[in-house]
Figure 1 (cartoon, rainbow, N blue to C red):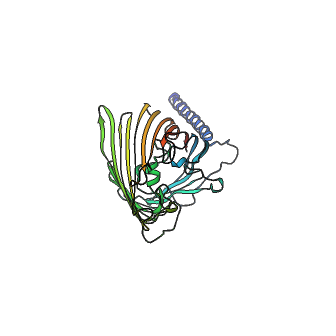
Figure 2: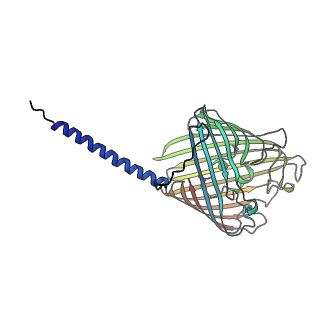
Figure 3: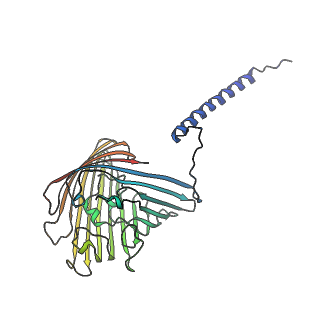
Length: 385
């Protein structure tokens, strides 16, 4: 009896061809991985391993390299010459645990301010350092140092701001980062969210509280409309926020307090909107602070106001956008002639989204005690890794 092996031979040959293809694909993948890791395949590959029990650990950060030329459009630039400098250089570690906790620790080794920082004082400072319990989407609990929920512009990530610098009123009337605890979440997913926190009320990287009172800050924002308008994708978002504090405040430059230090009661409110229609974007924000100094010096009360309105248009979708902003800041409404008004025109080119982008802004401002129409050209290169 004769048995044909032709069918078996064909099957073996087909399986061998598949194996050869798989081996070839693995070699290509291995070579690509070596290239991404920058490994020559000979020396020992260095490994960074988490020492805790977290199930996810990420290393990241970003750089803001600036070039600035011109005069002082507002008080933040007084006495600053033309310069190149690192506005921010931040490195962070973040991660999460299976037990519904996530965390972040970030330091800045750049200038970390608009004003000039003497080289002797240029040292790493902590920015966001917190842990967060995320068991419920509607009620996260965060503790540590992080941004206080007051002011839309200051809450926006530094890597996503539409202009190189936030408007002056934001820098003067919001409280940046504080140490405290906050509850936040989505009451209606993608529609309505809130953020409420209790903080020491001092300044960033300060572990002390000047008295037994705390600063309270909260924000509610929502998206009343998201859909199609005039055959264009459109979104409208609005927000309101408030804060209350009683104690010794951080330096309150421009408000007229003795030594720029404030002791007393303060409350603030604010409102904002953001609107997008296809390639067009519009936004506005208003902030108000009321100060009642304990010593009634220089006044029994001081009321400050600031606002901005801005618009932008994507000349090339997701690649090139031009923007314009007008903002005004009045540190004391009982006095005249002390407001700062600034126009900012900007152009942003996204090389690879926000991960790699170039910004060019021209600021033209009129500040108290300074000649009108002082201009400054600012360029920024942003790298997110």
